[in-house]
Image 1 (tube, rainbow, N blue to C red):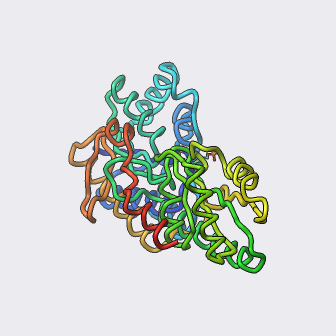
Image 2 (image 1 turned 180 degrees about the horizontal axis):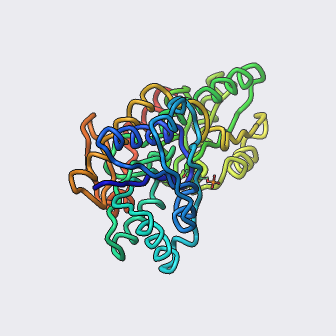
Image 3 (image 1 turned 90 degrees about the vertical axis):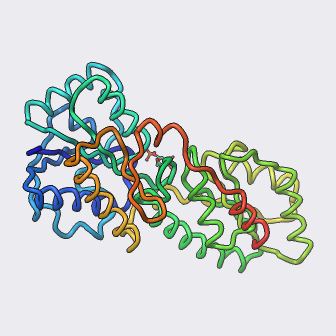
Length: 322
Ligand code: F6P
């Protein structure tokens, strides 16, 4: 193998730059030419290719976002789009690809590899932590720290005014951000898409808190919760507890940006390095993960089909400790 490419795709995540830097520098260390593809699969189809040097990834380890930019590509979902992407890769002499992204990225890579011969290896870049076969994805640790920081601040004002806050965090299909940011900020309740939300139980517990003179409360809602978004849930609760002043706060995309935490940078760097080594070892069609601090290799289809379960004991922690 003489030439590889790397790209970032799907929702960006803090630590993607650290991973990219590791891919480029590990590739160069092994005498490979490394090409950066801009704008994910969109750039692959358009041939938006750029030669990377060790210097081109200087000063990005600590930056959020991705210097290669990202996209969600509808064209790559079509056979014609994938054919165009293949032709571009072939024309550029690319013999292996590192994909940094989430489930959409790996589903695309998996379909591509059934049609074409160029091997792909993935690094799990998503704040949602919703991929199977890795304890943590790139971006998750930073996102929960960002959420925790914001929730701490909201808690100050909630206490000052005796208010009940519903705070919505990201996680369209997964409640991992909600779960750990709730534990870390001492929230009174957390609602996640993985479990059915019991509105009666939620109201009963908030009422109990109120009767016990706990006059401010925080409920963390994952955006994909089955009972609806934070506004909808707050509205329903307000109807049953009209004596409580209810507020809603949507944290939104601030959770996607910012400087990656130290652990994020270390994890992302290691995954990027292992991805290049995996390509050189002839591995393909798999995501690099880390389980108990050891590198794991998970087939794309397995990584995307399910995600790790929400541990009931962690949900119980919120209930007991909050
Ligand atoms: O996949 C990561 C994620 O942040 C989800 O939690 C969220 O629902 C989605 O991306 C938002 O995507 P976009 O930025 O395209 O609106």
